[in-house]
Image (cartoon, rainbow, N blue to C red; front, side):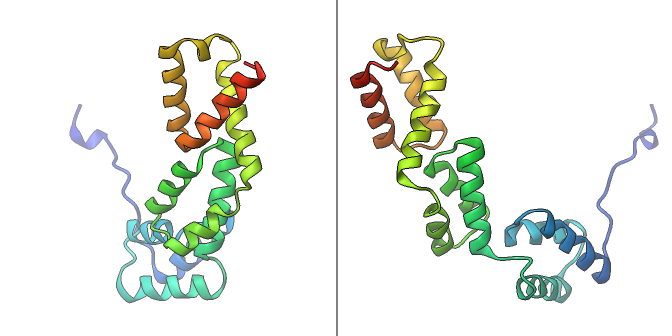
Length: 169
């Protein structure tokens, strides 16, 4: 096959007007971080003062709001994917969200609901094998799984103790 048989999809260069229209639509679909929007604009070769003007307009017009994004991200990842606070925190850091907004986002998670969700994650993981908590190797695998979901070790211990004391394995 000749090399010209393949078409490489390059991102098209956006004019300022097209960039404004497209990026407003992009932000209207769901909350976006400044980092996501900046990356999208850069991928379409919007640079310099045009980029900064667009970013400023998006903030002024309410299309971009870092605190709103942090809260929405934390609620969504917790409720939909059942992530723990550690994984959510790291996700927000990857979006380059400020420490203040990260704190505000994590406040969206109720402590009682957080424990109940962690409990349900563990219960769904052990529903087919009730003896996991009695086998040290299997118990360690379970702890690693829950830890990988972003839950703190203290919460994991409380959940396991709750299950062991209830006999509700």
